[in-house]
Figure 1 (cartoon, rainbow, N blue to C red):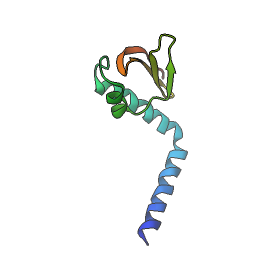
Figure 2 (cartoon, rainbow, N blue to C red; figure 1 turned 30 degrees about the vertical axis):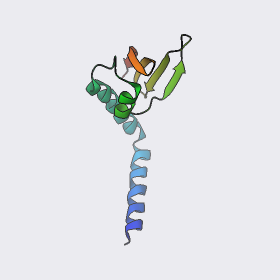
Figure 3 (tube, rainbow, N blue to C red; figure 1 turned 45 degrees about the horizontal axis):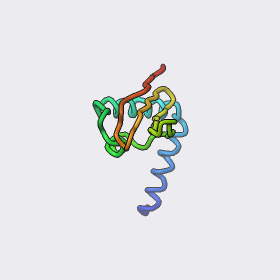
Figure 4 (cartoon, helix red, strand yellow; figure 1 turned 60 degrees about the horizontal axis):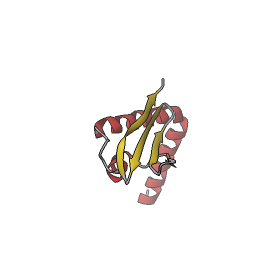
Length: 99
């Protein structure tokens, strides 16, 4: 079996597992993103780049009426929102988890 065929079979198997266990995969993503933020520590004063390099890009970005940027990371059971001014985090404005 060639390397390309082996890789293709592996990718199909992984895709099948993710498709079959999508609820579990979403639950795992919730735990991962929540733990990444916990491990990041205090976010206030960190740059947007520092945060996104560690936890990934936000799922939602909004510009507030005062020009600040609201970045949100939203998964099925976890939500955290950070406000940025001039690319520097002013802190967490909202964080929630659900079962």
